[in-house]
Image (cartoon, rainbow, N blue to C red):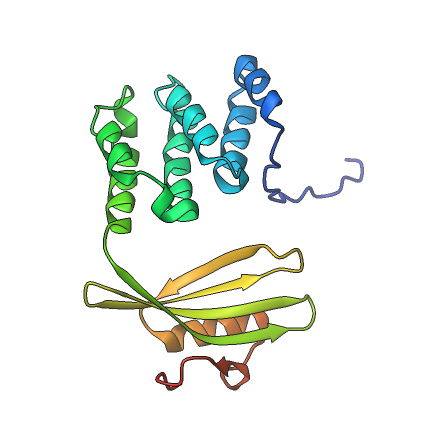
Length: 198
């Protein structure tokens, strides 16, 4: 056997294409390219109505993966656009029986996620921390939802993009995970909300 380097699988986030390229990608029928396009549209495109029109066109696709990514996009739009997103309209659309029975669970999950956005959630930023190398800014947030309390950890990278890094019921588990992954000790966090004690 000749020398052969072991290939590493590296995830690359799909890049947003120009609006005039969307139609060509759809016409190509390439499931992978269409799914990548949909993910990028849902996560980055600033025109919600444009993305909604693409979702409506493709969500009943015979291709399971294309249809399932459309359902993910609905959730992305709900999170990104908040009150601008018409949750009631989409819940009504999702009541229709999916063309592919394999999508039933996906649809139910999407509906559950959308219904959660209708519940009042009290959001309080508790702590921040900064990592010098690589340059990252961290934040711990408390969520209060119908008597349930959870804690979320997110960080902002050097390009200004925010990444959600998990949700916990026990804030001490969150501190421990961040310390193990990034080396930020519990005492390194700067308190924002004085009502919370570490």
